[in-house]
Length: 189
Image (tube, rainbow, N blue to C red; front, side, top):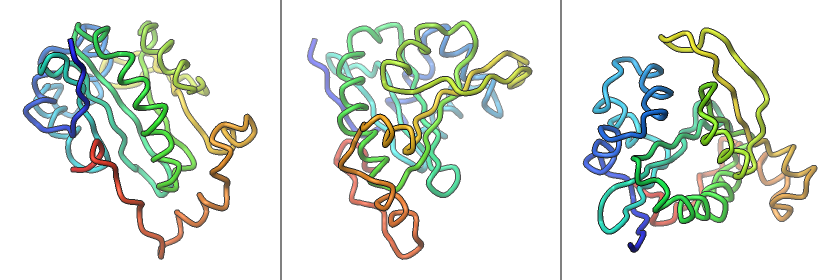
């Protein structure tokens, strides 16, 4: 089936949230204020950037990032059981567009929290270049063990990832007089 990546809308995201993979729901819903898919969907399309992957026209996965502090972003993703149909397209978009966009927007850090036991998510985050850097106990209403996976500009510079973007670019992007770069169509709200 053809995969299409589109700007996230509430209707697409709420469909995905209501039909999330079991592990995604166990991981994400206890970290929301109400535990309701509708509220997760509303939070996912407000602020930051967000994209949806459609397979044959049906919403399958959504992902995005929100700046939670100056130059620091929180990234997220959840999907239905049809994830395998869009996984390659989503992975490519994140590596080729989203991560470089975050760097050009001045991000010096992006992180994602994932529950112990969600091994598929952990492998995927590592495939995207994230590193597990911390583990917290009693995280969320269910008091589970969560791991923080992160991307840092310092680490990418040391490893020559995105070597065309240096720390000076990030410093300039964080200055109050600099505006955020124009977003590509797949990231606009």
